[in-house]
Image (cartoon, rainbow, N blue to C red):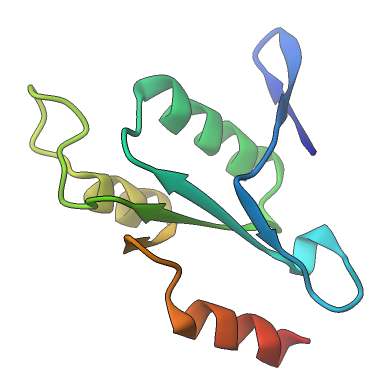
Amino acid sequence: MIGYTKPQKNARYTPDFVIHNTDGELNKSLIVETKGRFLTQDRAKMLLVKAQHPDLDIRFVFSNSKQRISKQSKTTYAMWCEKNGFLYADETIPKEWLDEQRRRN
């Protein structure tokens, strides 16, 4: 688990997948979040985790990155990721991400 602080309280974030490097250090691992729906509270949580752990490599795999974050917004999940500095993919973890992690090891 990865600790992070919500305003006024401590909370915990458990990643969907962690692809560890050979020495098991979390800050050298690839953290993958899989999302169908990416709700407001999920987006806020991920921004807090990233701000408090800037050394973590957190990436998203969406069922559809072109989906809008809400009916009222023109912003898609992909656009949100790009704006906030997260890498993302659709449906599966890209082979390139896994190859990159192997090269880190």
